[in-house]
Length: 164
Image 1: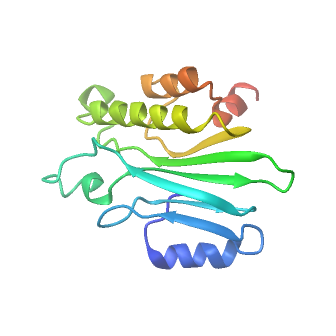
Image 2 (image 1 turned 90 degrees about the vertical axis):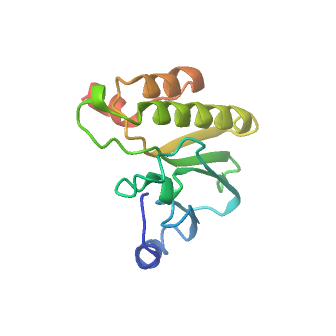
Image 3 (image 1 turned 30 degrees about the vertical axis):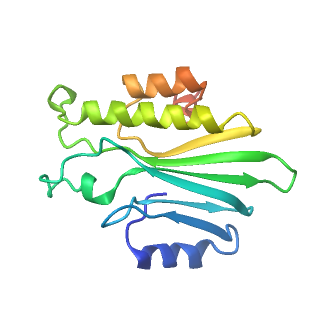
């Protein structure tokens, strides 16, 4: 879930408390990462990582560098004993509609590679993984293809669209 302001986090926590009593907000730099996880089951372990390639400090109007976009991971054990890693991410924004004019495509690909390396190093001791967040990528892009092929992920949204 993408949340920026502390008041929004408190509001969401109040609204979701009865169904999802466990929360972790992943802090970023100046204005936060915009990512958090709400869980039905206790969150046993969390870690966060800001991407190395994350925009430019002189592009104040873009904000990515100041937010410290990155990813978080929460390890959760369900009531049935299944151990799950939940990864939440926010890749750098795309500020133009034309992908050919996207000045941050290289940053986004570097972020995807960082994410893949981290997930690869943390996924083997769990029963399942879930990867969610703001990818700022379309289904046919190289970044999504890498995530699906290297990690063996399925795209729940795409599966629903293709099967409807």
